[in-house]
Length: 455
Picture 1 (cartoon, rainbow, N blue to C red):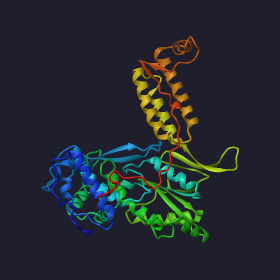
Picture 2 (cartoon, helix red, strand yellow):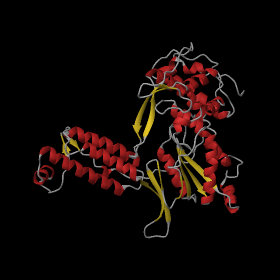
Picture 3 (cartoon, rainbow, N blue to C red):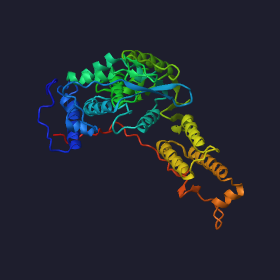
Picture 4 (cartoon, one colour):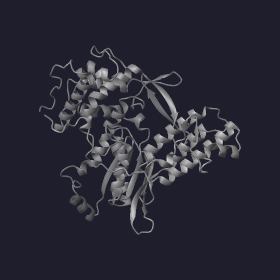
């Protein structure tokens, strides 16, 4: 197949439903990209302004005449989690710009997904944070005990535009598509004070296209560290990795979720420090650097926090065997407790039923994310904390004594406590959430555009 062949050679079937047509287009783009890693795609712009693409993106936008120009994104600063007092800058695009970004994403994502390494899990279809945690757990039990726990400083704000566009051009030959991506990168920023600033670097958080562009830039790091594991490489098979260890050479595996990543090393601390320097040089080529305050080299026995979980190697109680355990980190627990305190303040005059509904939403979402950790004790403690907060708030709200409260929520027939409830709404019991282990899915996570038997 010619490397720079056009792709939009047929007449679109305007009789098909838009979602079906877009899905078929994505399957074809992904198949062609996977079949020929060196292929550059031309004549993609017709797909971007195709009515079906824009209808799936929720709105029709006139792009064909080239008159479209993105406007500066509106800046909003929000507190970073953890109570550090620092602020995170978000760039909120207009509705029109979001629609065009969505159309671009529909076209570009299946192409670049064919190139992305299986070690990245953030903002990619069919992948989630639990896959990254499961992979760390898998390699931690396989001798990879030294960890480079890394964080990139202001990643979305500092990505070099030239380096990013060069990586886009490796796959996209259509100059109109590249120009549209560049226009979004250079759209500018409208600050909270109403001042307009140029954007010379970065892809502001808040846009639909930003996570994909960040993954395109950071895939350079994935490719660099995974080069040894490609077919024919000196870490491509288990035997090759054993030979390296016999020669005193380290093996490693990167696990990345957006700009947070951990490098698992089967070697020594010095090997991990050397990798840190090497990775720093790779990041510098795309305008990025480590956050020195958040980047550390640790042994798995010490443990480290990643994506809200704490991973640590411990000796199983009553045995001499060591295992890697996944716990809930301290910060998410403090965060959810703070939310519960804010909702159940003693002076709050909110409707009790509405409060119980909101508490249920928070606890269900929080526990659904963390239920794959070793967390039964944590969930029970959180359930007791929530019960106590609600009980005290209801007592204050209704001016109940302890005797009055017991009369309301103890079954007179059995003498047992009834679930706390108000207006027909029962307090969600987070301790009843089943705790299950999330299984590592290996390298077989399919993309939405993979066909079993492509024609």
